[in-house]
Image 1: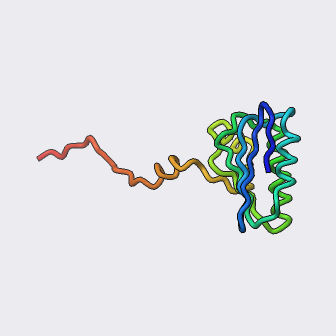
Image 2: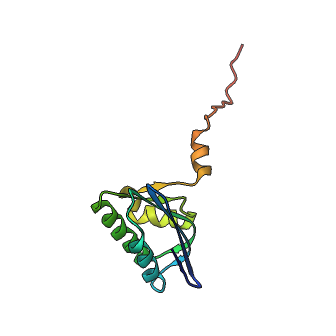
Image 3: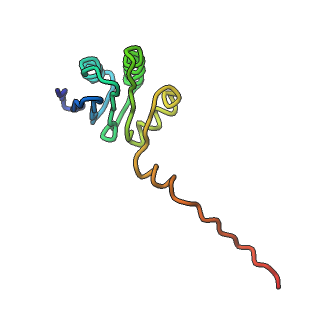
Length: 128
Protein backbone atom coordinates (compact mmCIF):
# COMPACT_ATOMS: atom_id res chain seq x y z
CA UNK A 1 0.00 0.00 0.00
CA UNK A 2 1.41 3.37 -0.98
CA UNK A 3 0.30 6.99 -1.28
CA UNK A 4 2.48 9.25 -3.35
CA UNK A 5 2.33 12.82 -4.56
CA UNK A 6 4.94 15.42 -5.39
CA UNK A 7 4.96 16.62 -1.78
CA UNK A 8 4.03 13.53 0.25
CA UNK A 9 5.16 9.92 0.12
CA UNK A 10 3.64 7.26 2.37
CA UNK A 11 4.88 3.67 2.33
CA UNK A 12 3.26 0.95 4.40
CA UNK A 13 4.70 -2.37 5.57
CA UNK A 14 2.38 -4.83 7.28
CA UNK A 15 3.52 -7.44 9.79
CA UNK A 16 1.70 -9.83 12.09
CA UNK A 17 1.65 -7.49 15.09
CA UNK A 18 2.56 -4.13 13.58
CA UNK A 19 2.00 -1.79 10.67
CA UNK A 20 4.97 0.43 9.83
CA UNK A 21 4.09 3.58 7.90
CA UNK A 22 6.96 5.68 6.56
CA UNK A 23 5.91 9.26 5.89
CA UNK A 24 8.16 11.62 3.95
CA UNK A 25 7.73 15.10 2.53
CA UNK A 26 5.19 17.60 3.83
CA UNK A 27 1.85 17.28 5.59
CA UNK A 28 -0.13 20.47 5.11
CA UNK A 29 -3.59 21.49 3.92
CA UNK A 30 -2.81 20.26 0.39
CA UNK A 31 -1.57 16.80 1.42
CA UNK A 32 -3.43 16.05 4.64
CA UNK A 33 -6.23 14.19 2.83
CA UNK A 34 -3.72 11.68 1.41
CA UNK A 35 -2.14 11.29 4.87
CA UNK A 36 -5.57 10.72 6.46
CA UNK A 37 -6.47 8.23 3.73
CA UNK A 38 -3.29 6.25 4.37
CA UNK A 39 -3.89 6.21 8.13
CA UNK A 40 -7.52 5.17 7.82
CA UNK A 41 -6.76 2.42 5.30
CA UNK A 42 -3.95 0.86 7.36
CA UNK A 43 -4.82 -2.72 8.38
CA UNK A 44 -5.76 -3.22 12.03
CA UNK A 45 -2.81 -4.43 14.11
CA UNK A 46 -1.90 -3.92 17.79
CA UNK A 47 0.72 -1.29 16.88
CA UNK A 48 0.77 1.37 14.18
CA UNK A 49 4.26 2.89 13.89
CA UNK A 50 4.69 6.15 12.02
CA UNK A 51 8.27 6.71 10.91
CA UNK A 52 8.47 10.49 10.47
CA UNK A 53 12.22 10.81 9.92
CA UNK A 54 11.66 11.97 6.34
CA UNK A 55 8.94 14.50 7.15
CA UNK A 56 9.91 18.16 6.57
CA UNK A 57 6.64 19.80 7.64
CA UNK A 58 3.72 18.96 9.92
CA UNK A 59 1.02 21.63 9.84
CA UNK A 60 -1.91 22.14 12.21
CA UNK A 61 -4.05 20.07 9.83
CA UNK A 62 -1.50 17.26 10.15
CA UNK A 63 -1.49 17.54 13.95
CA UNK A 64 -5.30 17.25 14.02
CA UNK A 65 -5.17 14.21 11.73
CA UNK A 66 -2.45 12.60 13.83
CA UNK A 67 -4.48 13.12 17.02
CA UNK A 68 -7.63 11.73 15.37
CA UNK A 69 -5.69 8.67 14.20
CA UNK A 70 -4.26 8.17 17.70
CA UNK A 71 -7.77 8.26 19.21
CA UNK A 72 -9.11 5.95 16.52
CA UNK A 73 -6.33 3.36 16.97
CA UNK A 74 -6.64 3.53 20.76
CA UNK A 75 -10.44 3.06 20.58
CA UNK A 76 -9.76 -0.22 18.74
CA UNK A 77 -7.35 -1.36 21.45
CA UNK A 78 -4.16 -0.52 19.58
CA UNK A 79 -1.32 1.92 19.98
CA UNK A 80 -0.03 4.57 17.58
CA UNK A 81 3.69 5.27 18.01
CA UNK A 82 5.59 8.08 16.30
CA UNK A 83 9.13 6.93 15.52
CA UNK A 84 12.17 9.07 14.79
CA UNK A 85 10.50 12.41 14.04
CA UNK A 86 12.66 14.91 12.20
CA UNK A 87 13.77 17.87 14.38
CA UNK A 88 11.11 20.17 12.88
CA UNK A 89 8.36 17.61 13.45
CA UNK A 90 9.60 16.82 16.97
CA UNK A 91 9.30 20.51 17.81
CA UNK A 92 5.73 20.66 16.46
CA UNK A 93 4.83 17.59 18.53
CA UNK A 94 6.23 19.23 21.67
CA UNK A 95 4.65 22.64 21.05
CA UNK A 96 1.25 21.09 20.29
CA UNK A 97 1.41 18.86 23.39
CA UNK A 98 1.08 15.62 21.42
CA UNK A 99 4.22 14.31 23.10
CA UNK A 100 2.10 14.06 26.27
CA UNK A 101 -0.70 12.14 24.55
CA UNK A 102 1.03 9.56 22.37
CA UNK A 103 4.24 7.57 22.40
CA UNK A 104 7.11 9.24 20.55
CA UNK A 105 10.38 7.40 20.09
CA UNK A 106 13.17 9.88 19.49
CA UNK A 107 16.04 9.29 17.05
CA UNK A 108 18.51 6.60 17.97
CA UNK A 109 21.32 9.14 18.32
CA UNK A 110 19.44 10.96 21.08
CA UNK A 111 18.72 7.69 22.87
CA UNK A 112 22.36 6.63 22.65
CA UNK A 113 23.50 10.00 23.98
CA UNK A 114 21.15 9.64 26.93
CA UNK A 115 22.60 6.21 27.75
CA UNK A 116 26.21 7.41 27.90
CA UNK A 117 27.54 7.94 31.41
CA UNK A 118 28.11 11.51 32.41
CA UNK A 119 31.65 12.15 33.56
CA UNK A 120 31.86 15.01 36.01
CA UNK A 121 34.92 17.18 35.73
CA UNK A 122 36.07 19.81 38.13
CA UNK A 123 38.54 22.62 37.99
CA UNK A 124 39.06 22.61 41.72
CA UNK A 125 42.52 21.81 42.89
CA UNK A 126 43.11 20.74 46.43
CA UNK A 127 45.73 22.71 48.30
CA UNK A 128 48.38 20.51 49.84
